[in-house]
Length: 314
Ligand SMILES: C[S@@+](CC[C@H](N)C(=O)[O-])C[C@H]1O[C@@H](n2cnc3c(N)ncnc32)[C@H](O)[C@@H]1O
Image 1: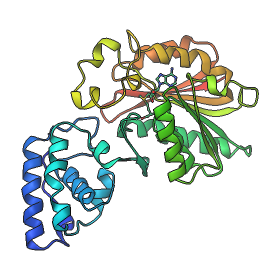
Image 2 (image 1 turned 90 degrees about the vertical axis):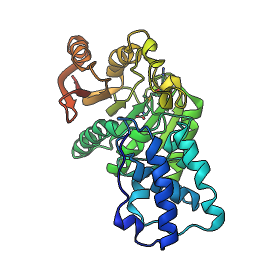
Image 3 (image 1 turned 180 degrees about the horizontal axis):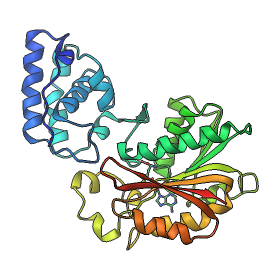
Image 4 (image 1 turned 180 degrees about the vertical axis):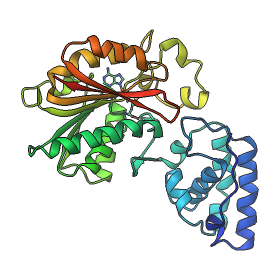
């Protein structure tokens, strides 16, 4: 649990009674909150700010909530705090309460329909956006494809950073596709981002896409099936199993992706995907022996762990 003091900036516009109310509920929240290492943006203070804004009627990601001053609540709004704090302490993810999560600088809609985008996935998103931007320098109209798109976070993060790029996305889950489409509309990117429903690359298995993709991204399910039940209940009981379950060894989708991607990626283009903690070296080995790829680049996190792999299509 990360218990943290509220900042003077957060308190600046609150009168003494509001400050006392806020400090009270922050104390209650901080006393029991179990934050998870894969959501490092959440502390007791940032969560309290998000819940306060939510009580006031504003749905904000935890980062956006921490950046804005808190305003006094009406009596009716203040009466919502015990329930909101209680829900969070009972393990409902903060992003499910606020229905918002920030990813690559974008405020996205979040909910139980799809995985809550994780900050660690920005490593892949930023690298993929960079590769696509470099491809765009070549002068042709660039196209990215993001499979296992979930809420559409990678597709949208890439589209937002590479103006003019066409971005395709797909997911097997109908609910995830619905959420991704809502995100496309909310960000007004429907002219450039298209989301389809279906198995891995199948929704785009058509001549107009084969050999045409500049950057193909994927954050696949990569947890081994037996491990899923040992995950914290805030994850296992609230986020879709389909988002995690990578089969008996966690690499079922990864194996298919490595095998099937070369048909879609243009020569010189890139396959870019996330791997689970500890999977990097073995998956990198698979990539080097797979047909269709040349240069390979691992992306490591601050602890030196491989968290994504980039492979160039021959
Ligand atoms: C780890 S989540 C990633 C979601 C999102 N891209 C992100 O970065 O937060 C994996 C996603 O893969 C989807 N998925 C699982 N099996 C799939 C399949 N065979 N074809 C397409 N999508 C699949 C799940 O529904 C889930 O949305």
